[in-house]
Amino acid sequence: AGEPCPEPTIVPSYYTTSDAVISSESVFVVEISLACKNGAQNVVLYADVNGKQFPVTRGQDVGRYQVSWSLEHRSAQSGTYEVKFFDEESYSALRKAQRNNEDVSRIRPLFTVNVDHRVSWGG
Image (cartoon, rainbow, N blue to C red; front, side, top):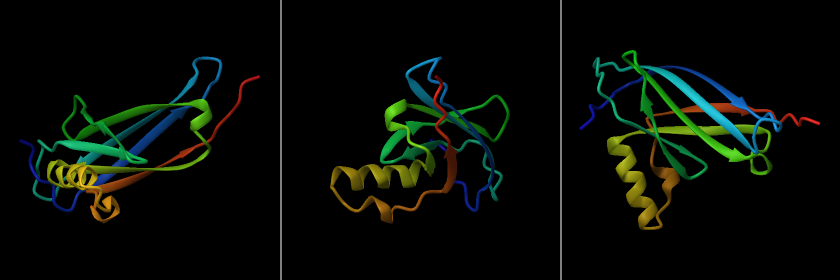
């Protein structure tokens, strides 16, 4: 089981690809550096983007995490994507709320990262 992470401090970075020549999908990658007030290093994270959940992988270095996902170009509109990160406890509450058709917006994520995506069309 993962450790809880009270009062997390994060340093996010991200990049997105939208080169229509390379593929038919836009790829989003968010990397974060996470420090917990209690020094926890074994934090299990999950990400939620627009109601879809994605696993967050742990990097080689302590406190480094990464999540990536892709969208077809036509559904990857320009704008800001809110990536909500959940720990095990809040993630299980989120999943339970989804199963019971409850209001998931009241489940507070551990932290949130905003990703700006600009669509550029090759041509």
